[in-house]
Image (cartoon, rainbow, N blue to C red; front, side, top):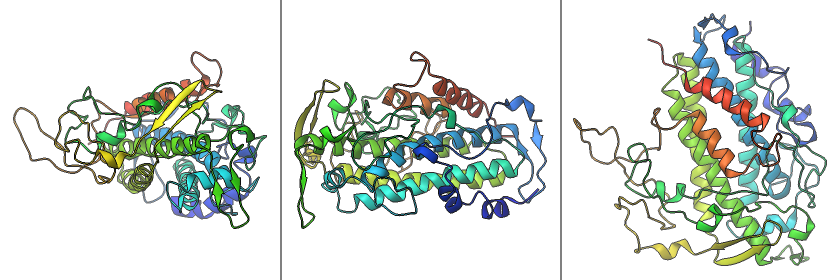
Length: 407
């Protein structure tokens, strides 16, 4: 069996992965057979012929779950990139992007298109690497391609015939990540803390983060000198995307260190400790850009929902970073405020800046899946009450959460 490094240099290389059409029709799917086997098919440990040493069944479960989750991320980021990212042959170019949506995103930052492109590229690489690594260890990777049955955006720039895993048009976005990192309160110790929503209206009703069709870009225009005139409606869609970017990447920021505590094999631990910080870099970027949203209110006739954005910079001085209510909304507090950590009735340490939450008792793989379900990403998947894709993800998540570090 080849070492993982040599395997990745072969047919599963990220560049060839993108070029050989493994995401054909725009769906976030990875090459490989249908993953129907259960982890019970594995022995307690799998003897590796490479340099990685023994790998436990729990390690495999964690890697398979992350392999699946990265496909979900790749699917949603591909949709964002098709419409709002830099268009080149490194990701996937079908319709050449949507200039009006891209222009609306640039209100948040002039480099948004490049950042979206790069985040998409990163998620593809994570999914491809985890697939190749699992196979190098004699384990089956996860293939979600048969779940890619949701419709694509019909706006200019999108791959209109592609089947999607995720739905970006009916989102209910939890923006409490904003105050969770700007407060002294640690959700590991106080999961019921009332962390304030940065945009309360995004957490109510359903909102689209991409133009569903050209009706959503109607009224906006691009002049000959590439300056844009953007309607409030399209601005609201772009601002919704900005906060959704941060929501998605905050999940990975916490998930990787949480699952790393359950890993036994040192090479697998190295993988989680190496991929995880890239998710944190994504989150840091997106929460900073989201804070540049301008004040506006928009009513979406399709979703029958209203959204109101405010200037979060105005929150400066109105909230206290040391508040135990987790209500800090100040826009330029983009570094994590020190918080309580490893404290119990016998020990008390001073606050420290950390990633949170990371408790294996309160958070983990199942919690991550549930947050994506609550986000509305899988609305439209069948059956409606308990979609097969969600059942698959929850099954993988439960196996990952059951993993225990072996001595």
